[in-house]
Image (cartoon, rainbow, N blue to C red; front, side, top):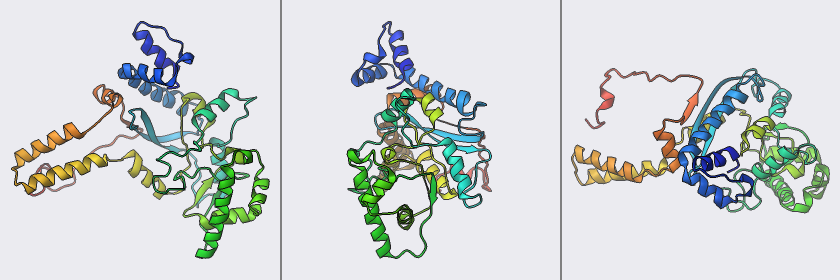
Length: 352
């Protein structure tokens, strides 16, 4: 929706000229829908260029990348986005290197601060347009709670990037008291008139010192986490890398992974995410077929028909699959290794 070259290329193919900056949201949607092939192919080329010409370039905007893996996923409305893991050479290791070394590394490549609108007008425009979490939380934000944003917005402000760990021997009463104080702080951050306050002034309104504030963060923490440097006015800004945002010109969320468990959980829940609704539907079809004593041939036909009819994909995803565009890409090749004693066994139905 923000990439001028995609919109203008489609209209040029249709023999028309258009002023990108005069188009409203609805008009851009109509243009993109009119040619999902060009839309998807240009997205693929943009991702390729982002890695080749920036992330893996000598400029090293996030350090020297030694490994990466990404998977293409499509939102409900049909637009693609990337889930990616990147390994950086020389990156500090949490609990091996000092907290300060980790924080210095994070601060070098990730920020959540609003740029100066006078000295950095373009970057300020991009951050405010694509990196600001809406104060009118969506249904996704309150998926697991009626009141708390599951993405943690507004984020807790901090004087400098720091790491917090869960407190030791924190009883329920102290944890509840700390949570109440932090809730008060979040409520203040929701008020526009408080966004220009300093952190010390904001904490004073909550009757907290800086040390007490950090103690409250630790007492309510469920696991170790990075708190980015933020002024109160930055509490709704999602973490970003300046160089990547300027080049990509769309929303991005960049985070430093503290532990292996978080990395594995991310890979399983996002990068290797299964299509749950389809899987459940197929299970139901198979169970019904067995209940009706259908022979194996007819059972497989039912499964085939269910998959072909139930699997819903957007026009852009269809283009990606038909045109053989990258649905995933990594720096390492993957080889399937047969480890079963009987190499043919895996091709037989389990109940045979």
